Every structure is written in structure tokens, then in C-alpha cells.
Image 1 (tube, one colour):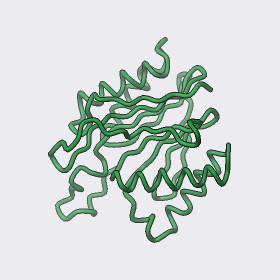
Image 2 (cartoon, one colour; image 1 turned 60 degrees about the vertical axis):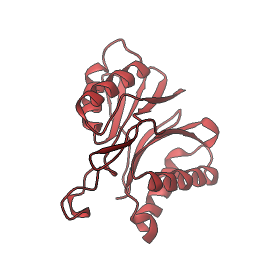
Image 3 (cartoon, helix red, strand yellow; image 1 turned 90 degrees about the vertical axis):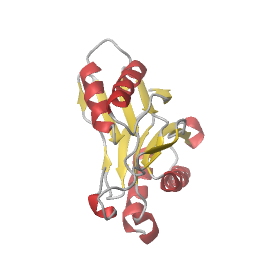
Length: 194
């Protein structure tokens, strides 16, 4: 998500929105994938960053779009909430969203997250959003980042095909990488059987 007021010329230097993260849940499998590009303004700083991770002993998948340091802070906070509420991803995410919205330090974090376990997939934002995707054409799909809308559109178009969740994520992220200059084709994909 782009916030034009955050920088005098309306550009955040590409840090906040510069990535694509996609989540697809279909036919008993949830997959989160993301690209590896890190951009600063119009310069590619790194091409193989790992923006998709496993948390809670591998039972939770998470991907972030935003400032890297902010995202790692959120990973740590989410991990702590998952330890406090084991096996309750929705509760942990709601508690994190409350802290994120109310805590003076966390409020300044510029990132969004997609998280999923066997039961649920959610989008988390600093405005207190904890959103679950609708199921359309047999799949639940969400995306974030600068190429998120391209990946979302591509994944929705592929949802009722006979492609599995991972194939949809790979193809949709490839399409986003072809369109979005802040997204590359160096993908990290993680999945959980549901």
C-alpha cells in the first residue's frame, strides 16, 4: 500500500511497497510465495531476500511487504503471540493487530503481512486490519505489495483451473514480476497441507 504523505515528493523510496506476496488456499493446501527483490527508490539493492518464512515450529506461514526491519519486528511479535496463544492463529493475529495499532512504537512500522496455518489465512496491517479472504472458484486468495494486485488478478484467473495452489502461486507471481518493476522472479514458496 502506498501512502503519498509519507515522503515530500510522494515516493517512499520503494521500500514500503516494493514486493509481491501471494497466498492461495486450494484443495487441502495453503501456499504463500514472494519474490526476492529489495529496492531503494529506483535501485535494486538485493535480488534474493527471503520475505516468506515459517513460524511457530513450521506450523504457520508468513510473508511480508514493507520495510525489512519493520517486518522482522512484526515476525518477532507474531512469534511471541503464537507462543502466548498456541494453535490459535486468529487470536494471535488479533492481539498483534491491537498492539500494532495502539503501541506508539509499533504504529510507525510500515509493513503488511499475510499469515496462514492449516485452518485460516489472514492479512494483517498497521491500521488494525485482520482480514480473511473470500473463497471464490474453490480457492481463497490474498496478495500484498506493489505487485499484489497483478498477482491477485492472475491467481483469481487461474483459481478454477486444474492447477494446484503452488502452481497458481508460481504462475501468478511470475506474471506480477513481468509487470511490476519492484518484483522479480526469484521466488520463495512455502506450503502447508491442510
